[in-house]
Length: 262
Image 1 (cartoon, one colour):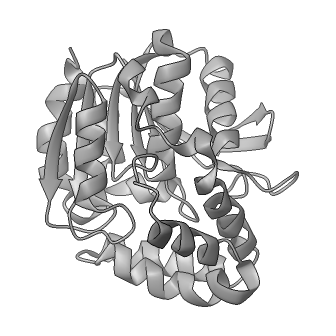
Image 2 (image 1 turned 120 degrees about the horizontal axis):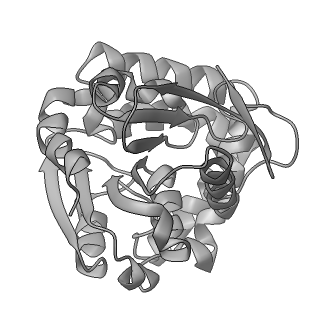
């Protein structure tokens, strides 16, 4: 895979096709392969790009462990390095947060957003704060519980889903626990809360939500739909990755949007 030098290290990415750029951004402890079920179809008519976040996949593990706000900087570095025309971003989980924040900070770079069970829209209650604090401990909680959590939030339906769970499990057994803990701890940062700032998103937005996800429940999707001015919410009977669990149904909605997000 080719790579790009960024503020937070070398970022590996997969690229194929020509046309409007479509940039795919994965979840914590996942990688670009999450998008394999839809990547080739998107590359038929678009310039498909799927990246690995710092300390994920094939990207380098040098430097400090990333926080959510670091991923926004990384994404901006990638967009600039690839000299992308206004792109459509498909962001899952923390990848959705990074894409939405880019649309707020640099709206001229974003032609459209597809936010899939996106982070940044959770109501911070005592219960959610306590859960995030538990997930922020690599030794006590994250390393032991991430494999169980992955099975719970994925609600596997397909071979792709099962392969994703195995990759998360493998990473959690190594330094992935520390990576995940650092990212989770940053979810308590006020900068991670998009509920008010999302009103500044002017890009057309699809919200694609798996309703069986326990980490970003449908209530988060409804808050996102209320916060983003030009957003449409679609639901799927899946876990955290509807594009892996129901790729053709996902593409049936997303495909026309990629052709004409306006």
